[in-house]
Image (cartoon, rainbow, N blue to C red):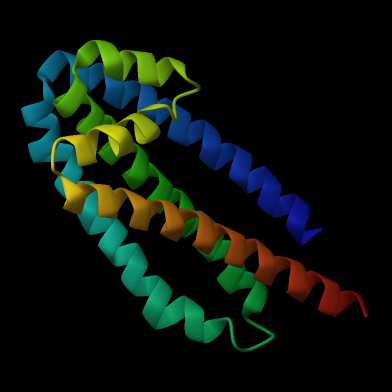
Length: 162
């Protein structure tokens, strides 16, 4: 039951993320990357830092106790979407800066996530190793937190059955 509710919530979050991404792409191409870098990226950095702090200081300790494990796992899945949005915007901005509008648009046509591999290819070739490491870290963080959150929800669901 809880797992089905979590999937339903994920579909709404995913739809909202797609809408937000489409809006941001329009803003990026109209206002330019400098405006985008000055306005949107600091907000995403702050949001990701807050989510990461909540993950470390609140959610991981709550995942130890069996009564709070499912809530902690559900919130971790939601937080992983915040990290994923940050990763996507960062990849889009790097692709746009390093490879141009045309390649960024082509990366968006690759189911939207094509900008991340393109940014990962372009960053080392331009000597941007810190940005490359940031992309790797955000990928691991997004997938790791999401997997661990699903794991916690599933464990708490099966423990309540038996």
